Length: 589
Image (cartoon, rainbow, N blue to C red):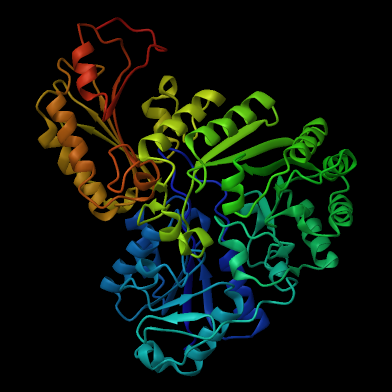
């Protein structure tokens, strides 16, 4: 019997009712292609389809994986899905102990002990995974008894065997990307799944930014040939996709950048799709920007990060501001949408230098879209390796946000993030539904909804009907004092779907009494009975995540609330939103 392998890549969870976009399982496609097509390993390899991976809640995903009866489940792990992947792996082990778990991706590093030593992990693939995963499958195919006794498995290069507590020797880097360039061409992934084709034409980076894990995995640049690039572009046009997203870490690091742009233009002769990618503004001349636009570029992302010289030195990324300004202006003049990144919390920055960076960008107008991030002290990076020396305090779990540095206190980082939002008049983590758009119909188009009348409750639904974004929509004639009837529904959802983004809506439109502050705080406590999830950590400001993350309480009325409610509103403002949807004309209550 051939090995049966299921490969899973979980998406960035939405902050509320919103359909997931952009979770292309490219790494899984690479692994499947190398194992089956390059090395001819007789294994059945399924990639969990986007219809499940992008929408299903934890319980439904678990059932879908177990129904496939896999010998091996492989998870591609990033900051946004690492803890959820391990939760699923643990549940798989509990229900099907013979299944082996292999993890890979940027979270699988030598210095990320909490992750690679998780009891559900059997093997971790470190760094470039195509050859490593194929060799591991070949070993297990030739000696299936090692699935039962992994402690006896040999040390495959590029792996961590948790049962042996050993790393295999280093794995040489791929010399060419032409094989990985066939995942779309040979049908491992369908570009129409996400209306996007991801193209990795170069692997490696000549820059060595201290906050970035990417260049630590590669000792040189590997390229995709011009012929394979053009084959992929012809497929993109034939498939009718809207976008080709270039995954190259810095597009203009390549010496043949201008020739590369001509290739991209040749592959998109009718402008059938658009290009987007990441580059450095320095070195972009007007003629290059115009060539980019003629090829089909509509959007680029640029990293300014900091204007502080000490911070630039420590992150090993000097910025020549005059050259940066010329490059951004050339891109904007060519009609290309420019996103510019700033990082708050870099070692060496102070509140003053961060403010200088915010003021510089805001006043210059050299952007269409600003992106301001709190520094993540990622595993595998120089900042992680030097965290004690640099005095970096950071979260112990993804996204590993910096909490303080020797020159930035926690409250200063929080204040600077707020100042950046004010300066750019934006919310860097917006909710998917604006308050004036909230309605039952609106939330059910972005995820699953259980509508519950507390006075006539429905039959208890299956937790497997919960999506990654779920809403509990309650109605009642009286809400005061009824938290005890609401909390069991919350526990029913989160017990089997702890990583869902859960909104609890108390629809008081027809109610005679409002929930009390005690009700609201008891509900919030129930929402956080389980360990924090990605958004809980992401939106937190301290090691113990706060109460505003992946869970939200909304007190909703389709009519204006009357009475002197200011004190009541203040009493619950920290944990709940009060929304009066006055767009629907109704009499005041």
